[in-house]
Image (cartoon, rainbow, N blue to C red):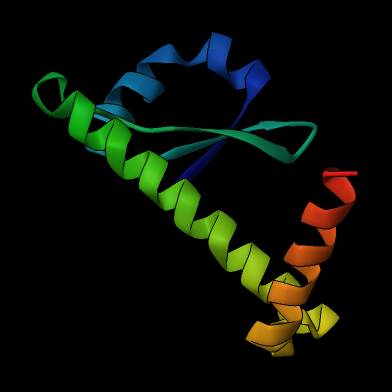
Length: 95
């Protein structure tokens, strides 16, 4: 994996094409901070690669939700407490 600033993108486009042909990922940065990932793709497998990216993002989101619940202690809420909260919200909504 390589890092490249947005300034370098304009000066060295041949490095981008070379890296993507080799299936190397490039992290694009602005002022040293990562903002994007540039990765090579295959035209024949474009849909599959996009679907894999969506699944990876979803799994990452679930992982972050789980970590947050552990930190907050909400991972220990019982099924009964969850159902009680759902019932309370539904009751408030129907008023």
